[in-house]
Image (cartoon, rainbow, N blue to C red; front, side, top):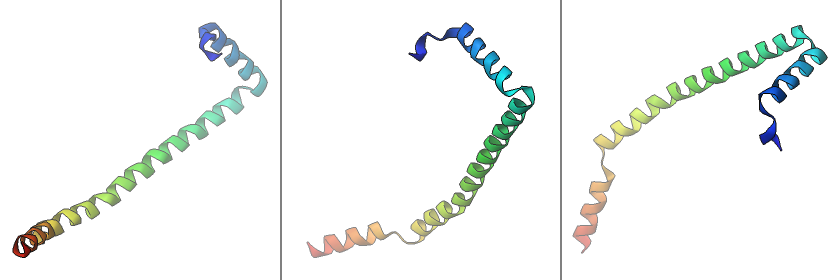
Length: 79
């Protein structure tokens, strides 16, 4: 159904929305959308920064203790 809209249809929809809501309301709405996108990007960036030290700690602890080696040694001793 939406595959046949095309550029003239989109322009017509944009004009109707502009007439119904007015330029001021649409610009404030787009400003809020922009703030939301910025806040989302900031949150994603902070989340990845918080995960990095935890990942580094896991890698360091695996280097110090290697449980896989101890397990395989026990299995060979039992056999």
